[in-house]
Length: 191
Image (cartoon, rainbow, N blue to C red; front, side):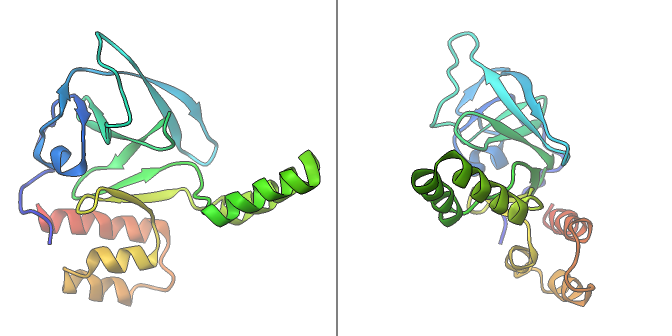
């Protein structure tokens, strides 16, 4: 079960956080105000961000996430960040489509064997399969980001039998808005 502290009312100090637990407790590993800039906006409704290094504060691989003005940003791909749209014990993010390691290997293999044309065709095919996978949840118990889906919702709601039962009664498969409603309910029930 989640820790019983009320995180919705907390203001977290700006700075770098080493892990989700530190973020929940409002204890940055380094306290500073990072300078953020949007590097790309996607038509699917998500943005990618970069942070500038300031005053000797290097943003590095040991940083799990950053907070600026009480907004959480977490590493997405080693150089860019995504911003939390909903914050709580379960956080909601939008980001680039999730591509599995197997799909990545298929793309690379096609580039190797069939050149730019073959690789591009495989990339396009895989992108069409995953283009709607832009919704993610951060489970602060694990500090991991997961694609938002029915299976993940069942795992997160397992400790709240009433919410899980209500979720199971929703029309199947429930859409993103319904799942976000349950993320909010779960966060409210924990606070």
